[in-house]
Image (cartoon, rainbow, N blue to C red; front, side, top):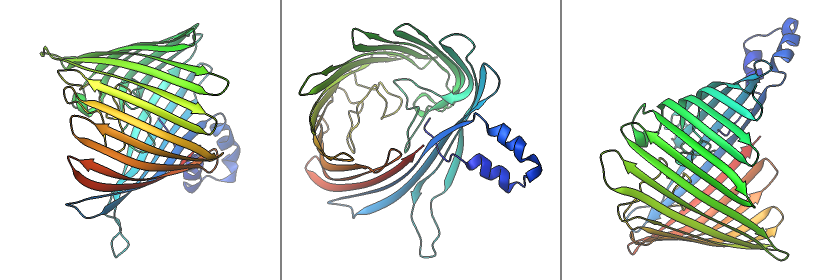
Length: 359
């Protein structure tokens, strides 16, 4: 998970009344502790021919802390806190509510060469889920995850007896196996997941980067199939991309389509097994097609400007927007989007400001 507030633990202990007598103990206690994270703010607004302009504020902070617990063991803690919607009243009060959620409490064993085994509450890092997002839905569950790297191949195996994946139903268990490899410069991965009495799914992908003298080319493709238990219909999606970078300029084309039975192949709309634009997405409709086009330029070392177009063919929905991204420092970035959305001939507009600090 992505994270936040590097010194919050120290501050909390200080407020609790630690004296100078145990200052040395505190120094020893936090030695080797790794705390990283993100704090994000987003303003989003939208309007259409039938609705007035409306804007919302969103805040989110995520922390991941790793504490040494012995020569081969470490303890992990993860928290997420955010306000989904904040509207200030005349009295200066907020109508939004802050939710603090424990998303990780686990132990990791690393006593085997090139292998880690993590048990407890933790992120679910699969192509069907979102395990890390500074502003949005993430997935976690209680279980065990093992990773081992042997040469160019990394193998993964996991079983979660309780998850927060809404698409599977409350508390649904799931097991996953996967392999990631690099063969002759081609990045490959293959995964299989089974949610008992609900579904099983597999996904495979390949990606390749070519560095030429005058340009860089990146391309990739992914195929995913999912079958609901008790159904003969196979949900499937295939999507791919190609990106060209030449000097200060870049351009990309992404295309995806669903099968004749539908494309319900992701547990989250932002997962790798599907495609997502800004206010558009591939979705799960049968035979749906989704196209994304983008051209951009790095006008300054820290400033990138792009023009983007996304289209859902069957849904008769498209959006065009300009994005300006500024990397103020290594840790602080922001982007602004302004665009128009057309749904079956009805026009609308949208805007977003996103500010994010990472450490």
